[in-house]
Image (cartoon, rainbow, N blue to C red; front, side, top):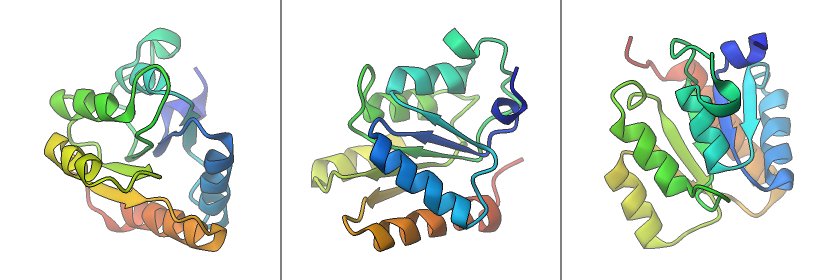
Amino acid sequence: MNDAVKEVEILLVEDNPSDAELCIRALKQSKLANKLVWVKDGAEALDFIFATGAYTGRTGMHVPKVILLDLHLPKVNGMEVLRRVKSDERTRTIPIVVLTSSKEDRDVAESYQLGVNSYISKPVEFDAFARTVSELGLYWLLVNRPPV
C-alpha cells in the first residue's frame, strides 16, 4: 500500500481535471499538498473512505483530515457521498467542505441538512479560486482542532 494513501490529510473529490489541478496547485503553493489524494468520482471516493474496491486493505485509522467534495460527480453524486460519510459512525466526524460550482439554495440547504461542515461556491477567477483553496487547506489542516 502506498504510504501517501495511508497518511492522507486531504481527499480531493473532483471530476474536472482543470479544477482539480487548480486545487492541487494552490495547496502545493501553501505546502499543504504532500498528503493529498485525488479521486475522480463519487464511487472512488466511497471506496477510498470505506477501504473497499481498489482501496481494500487501507485501514480506517488513516482517515483524511478533510474532504474537499464537488457535488456534480459521475457514478455517485456528491450529495450521496456526503450522506454516506455523515451517516456512518466511523466517518461522521471527518470534516467535509463542499467545493462546487453550484450556487443553488437547495444544494446549500441539503448539504447542511446532511452535515456538511462548509459550503463554498468555486470562484470563477483563478486567483480568487487559488486563494480560497489555500485558505481552506490552512484552516482545516492547521487551525481546526478535530475530535480525537
